[in-house]
Length: 506
Image 1 (cartoon, one colour):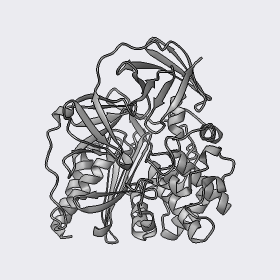
Image 2 (spheres, rainbow, N blue to C red; image 1 turned 135 degrees about the vertical axis):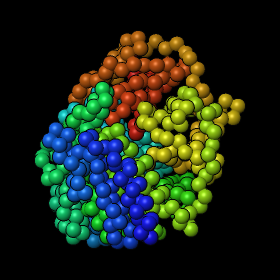
Image 3 (cartoon, rainbow, N blue to C red; image 1 turned 120 degrees about the horizontal axis):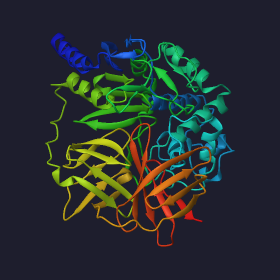
Image 4 (cartoon, rainbow, N blue to C red; image 1 turned 60 degrees about the vertical axis):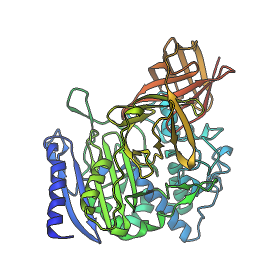
């Protein structure tokens, strides 16, 4: 890179960090061809103590941990101690029989169909800030008697799968996951500021405090209640993640594989593989109360961008993309950017009755499914895609009142505009055996009594004669679950990472 190009990149990064003075902030690192091009930090690691973020400040990197869990599985496979094609119950026979068809490879590629344990607990009234035990997390998996879909046929993100992978590493190696990762990956690579920390109450050297907006223009400390395993237990920093990217150990994780119908799964082994303007990117994000991470690589250009924040109002994924664009600006291999699309006709609330899913699209181009926001951007094929990791989504402009959306595995669903409808009679007590939870509904309000906590009241909204939206505020965002009242009187609930949960009225 020319010196002036580096100067431009440095100033772009400094401009992004400047507004964070006196606030919770972020650290940004850029590496290329084995050299750190820049390391910058802005904002405070501790607002209370006035401690600034430095380039060696550590953060909880949440789901960026998943690729390290997959690397541990790969190491054991190279040593002949297991195979990615092994059924998970071969190594964890105590799991419920419904997991019989799920392999370790399915778990690593998020195509197992196993429902997400965090989502299951949320539907039972537990938010991420509420304390849970390891046993309570495992019990949510053990209660399952069905899957989101048959293993290998679709994609749906599942923290449950990576929790189980971490347990497999421990069962096969005979070591705690933290020790295995330290001895086999972190220490050999010089990642001396990276640790697996399952107990969030244990102090960690140099760890920034995570902050959430307080709703009044300020910030509050984020509360963490869930223990963390192979799905998201790492603490790290920008330098260590750059070392990991340079090591080449993770290269074996980038191989994608098709779904059962032959369509390619963009989620490889703990990382996402995409194309941006003709270049292949390998990335993953991390989200935990008060922390956000973006880990982004462009292998053929030797480029790595890492953005880690302790400020929940920031969008490290978008920041990393801006840094990548600046670093690659003018590269001869870049294809032209897709032309802008007038998406005004997409604005509004939409419903897919066939899948029992709803979608909101704002005039600002921000869409929401289950309350999770993502920016829509034009794609090369003339559709609008999601600027959101691990979420296949491509929407065509509406025609004759129908908007076709393509999700994973080539699955397409027709969405029609939501029409006002009265709320059906839902009063009563509803039970879901796979959640171990009871919902009490009266009028337009539901309260949840789960196996470990109580939640609500949550507001119910009618999207049609039989389709409902259940608004469920959470620590991370104001989300919702979709539900369908079936002809035989059951309530089938579809949340972001847990589908087809059946409630019956007692």
